[in-house]
Image 1 (spheres, rainbow, N blue to C red):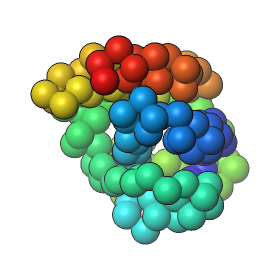
Image 2 (image 1 turned 180 degrees about the vertical axis):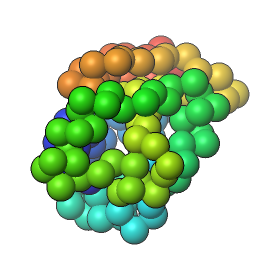
Image 3 (image 1 turned 180 degrees about the horizontal axis):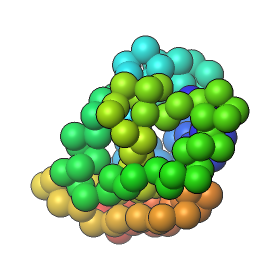
Image 4 (image 1 turned 30 degrees about the vertical axis):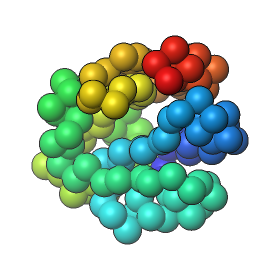
Length: 135
């Protein structure tokens, strides 16, 4: 809910939902935030796909995409009133990488976008192209 890049990406996916569905896909977002905050994110961004909660980052850990939030950035956020560890009810400030997966009907990942730069996200066109190939 606090990340403008995450929120913008959720809205971008929503704008492309007709094309994603036409290509045979559906979207599920997963957030480290608690269920109430995940629901608030859905409402705030007017999205109609599920935003699930991954408290403690157990799902993200299983994908190997958890990182320690840099100490200098954590201090800046705290100075501006956001303690990420406390907000996410965790012992230390950790977040998942920005990741997008396309999973086929057999449960296999056929497309993965992993990016350490939180400003970069998978383009909907790449997702739709992948979906069209596996349809």
